[in-house]
Image 1 (cartoon, rainbow, N blue to C red):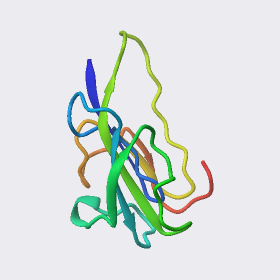
Image 2 (cartoon, helix red, strand yellow; image 1 turned 90 degrees about the vertical axis):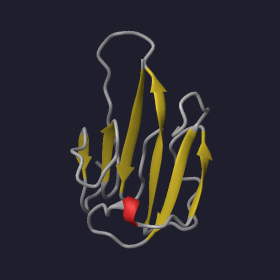
Image 3 (tube, rainbow, N blue to C red; image 1 turned 30 degrees about the vertical axis):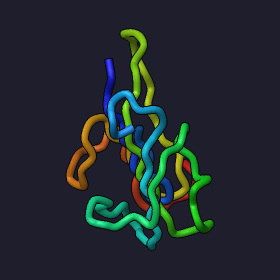
Image 4 (cartoon, rainbow, N blue to C red; image 1 turned 90 degrees about the horizontal axis):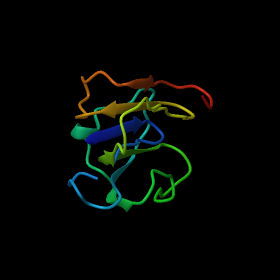
Length: 115
């Protein structure tokens, strides 16, 4: 079974590969200042690329940036799975399509310390 996983994180946006069967995660990197996660579909990314894991390595600076990672994950067997985010400032996790008005599976948005 494959599911689209998209995690959005204000200082870091997460998810997994926009093309089914592709290797890695497609990312969009944004620069800006937000107190809540913006509608990233309405913004132009500063750069895009592919990564094997969601990480902060492609960033251009230490503060005021965001990532949107998108792709597919393979669920190897039926069972219970835990999905979570850890962020210093906002993050959200979506299973299925991302949209600014879509309800996130994990909503850790807003300005806050590491949680």
